[in-house]
Image (cartoon, rainbow, N blue to C red; front, side, top):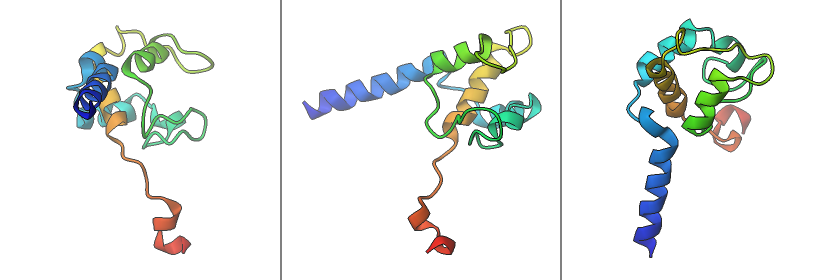
Length: 111
């Protein structure tokens, strides 16, 4: 039973990345910076000063892509002719690669 649950969890995690599970995080970081995503979402997707938090634990791929292609609110619209699906997949790979920061209790200066 535990094995089935582990297999299901792995399948769901892979499905959330969709076709872009093989995106290039380094290239994605360059695109994230070059397309000025960082100006609203912060350089590591922490969500300041204007945009929502993207990392760690980004939206599933489909929701991420939909928000970029058909944004709500004041986010610019990035059509595929300006930002390809491959580029967007690389940006997603970068955002998905950003680890969570340390807990406050683990930061020596805060102890």
